[in-house]
Length: 379
Image (cartoon, rainbow, N blue to C red; front, side, top):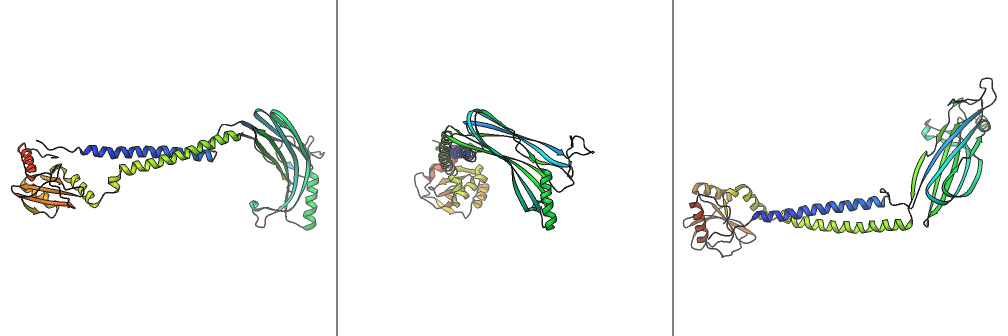
């Protein structure tokens, strides 16, 4: 009766399956971690209770003193003459548009700051104020508006000639090598309460006009268009709770993934030198090895201990007999060649004796297979 055959492929598939499951769990945990980080960094938009859009523009008109050179001021020119400039009429346009009607409080004003600036190293990026003075061009305006939109268009006249005269008096009196300009600053703040959640939107717009250049141009800086959302406290709480659940789920999946990978790779991770050497032998010489399913009893035979497995390979080639791999417990394997009453034995690992199978059974089985001129893979 043929000895039972061990299906080694089944033992290979199971660890591989656990490794694949572990990798899939790692992927799921990674996705949850990524989602949690996005929520905490506000990289992913959350459902908003209110959204609004702000648009700004600036109109400027340079007014000249009466001159025979210019009948109607600079017209459409974009650079201007300092000596002829009387004032610069500036209008700031601000538009606020919300998604739903809300009661909004607003406050805005316009100030001007005249500056005398100097850079010790001559680098414009390191310019610092030597002298400055603030002027209130438009007193603070406060109001309340209800609806979906709000528009303000404050306008001021910047007294260019007056500011230039002031800074010139300073420069000449103190002999200061300074450059000068005036910065007109429009500031507006919108505030409101959405579903019990307060919000504020502060915007600024600036117009910078040089005061000491014979020919000058005007610089502007403002937010042309911007959209924001107001998230109610209840919605934010729900989002944070969901993120917390995802955090715990990601941790659990990570633990399961590690467990599955360690279990699937346990033989590779925790292999002993004996197991590594046994795998190497099977990998390179599996075609000449008969694998027995039970340990053998060598009583009554003349034992010849072989020093290395290479010697067993040489004997196999010389005697034309197969090498029988006999398990000797979980920590050793005996490789034997049976030649009459002589048994050549190479032992790998530490022997654990289990006399549950006689040598005659092995000899009979091997002899039967050799009669059929086949090299069996297991016995």
